[in-house]
Amino acid sequence: MKPSNQPIRVRFAPSPTGRLHLGGARTALYDYLLARQMGGKFILRIEDIDLKRFVPGAEEELMQGLRWLGLEWDEGPDIGGSCGPYRQSERKEIYLDHAQQLIARDKAYYCFCTPERLSKVRQEQQRSKSPQKYDGTCRKLDPVEAAKRVAAGEPHVIRFKTPKEGSITVRDHLRGDITVENRSIDDYILIRSDGFALYHLAAMVDDHLMDISHVIRGSEWLSTFPLHAHIVRAFGWQEPVWVHLSIFLKPSGKGKMSKRESAELIKDGYSIFVNDLEGLGYIPEAVVNWIALMGWSYDDHTEMFSLDDMIEKFSLERLNPAPAAINFTKFDHFNGLHIRNLSTQDLCKRVLPFFKSAGYQVDEKILLEIIPIIQQRITTLDDAPVVGGFFFEDTVHPKTEELIGAKMTAKESADALQVAYDLLSKLPVINIDTAEIPLRVLADQLHLKAGQFFGILRVAVTGRTVSPPLIESMAIIGKEKVLERIIYGIKMLEKMAT
RNA sequence: GCCCCCAUCGUCUAGUGGCCCAGGACGUGGCCCUCUCAAGGCCAAAACACGAGUUCGAACCUCGUUGGGGGCACCA
Image (cartoon, rainbow, N blue to C red; front, side, top):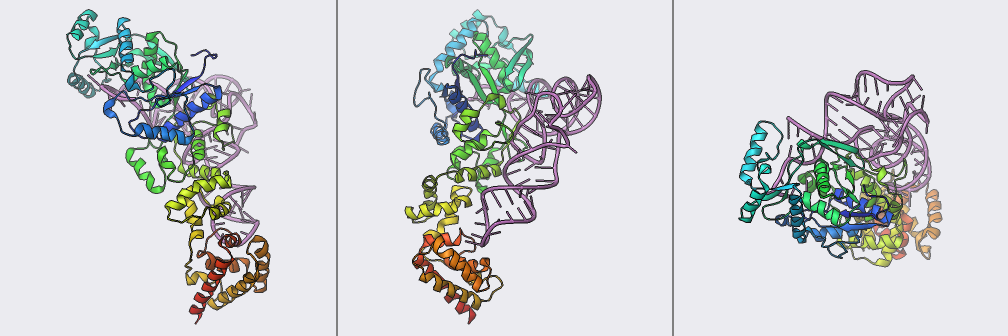
């Protein structure tokens, strides 16, 4: 454990072989929160030692995703820092050098076994149902002899010399001490035959050289955790605080999300990939709030947090080691909550692209007027054009049968529209102050329920049975158009009545 | 098969031996508000996986069982 007076340095270390998903984003979020809260540094390190698995664009997408969430890093491949380079592909020599140090200390050894032989050994072990591990052939080799073979150019890897006796106790911050028999830990490969390091070595070396105080990572590393501690101790380094986060399970809670299931999610308007979320109408405030609460809690009732709230309130102590099922319904809830929390201006800006891509010619002044009456009616930004798109349509096409009021005839409905027309046409402008009371009085005089009367008007004016509040909508549409549409509605009803 | 981790309402969780015949949230059902739809408010149904033990007392501690998850590569 690091002494508490040491500066907090945490790192998010993704491999750029895939897309940034919710689990990774949550790890990065916790890193960020801890760093910001403690006045420490948040470092982005790209774990791209395996060039064969390079995916073009992945690194860019990753950074874009983190920035969209608001998780700015203090050191990283794009902005540099005092512990660079921050791409493992640029640190090959460092790892090789450290592997040599381990050999010199008799903590590692050269291995000349071919992949073919190894896979045969593995098959054999599988068949006999014994633990699958390296059989130790080269561990027994004389170091001087081995060095000669290496010098002669014989293909080789470098393996860690895991102690065969005793056990090791490691401490996970969430789970406490974990003790494992050393004989159950393999002699893992540190350096491949092509000279590149493997994760086990590279990550430990980097974490030390970058002076990482807390390693926050997924629980898929729990099983190699003892090995990692062995490596760190073999160098004689101080261990960081290890925090293994639980994984995310699919919504059913049965297992983690498969590739195919992830791809199918998009049909329902959801995604586990951060970079899809913006286009689906989700806002980063909601994403961050939602994922933070899958594995962390503040108390027994507070659920809504801004990033700044969380910086203030986050603590490693309140992390939960149990796996969590992803619940997209709750995600929708958080998105609606945070949307309602936005200012009119802000929401206007965010919703604009969705109106445009839905094909609307948007007058921003009108959009600004619409926002207050649609804000509580949308849960994702892409709901906005379906709720408020009709404000940008010149004409409206009500269905005749929908123009007829509940329990009324076409003739009665037409008459109702006519008196509404007479009233509204006399008003200088239509808005909530000028129109509401007169309309209600009128409904009363016609012996109609407000619901019946407003219903007919709603369909005539908006072309739909469901809309934002009628009078506010009419105020935005404007007197002239409202009257035009009412006349049109009357004509439709009269045609039907005859 | 071997190793490791986890276990409270359908889901996310609060709970660290008595405040708990278990609290909050999403979702679900009902009611209120109401010009429709929302939003909001109120109410309801809904859980300590099982079995032993420790203790005056256990959701909380121990052991076992069961269930779930992760890992066992010259991937990360």
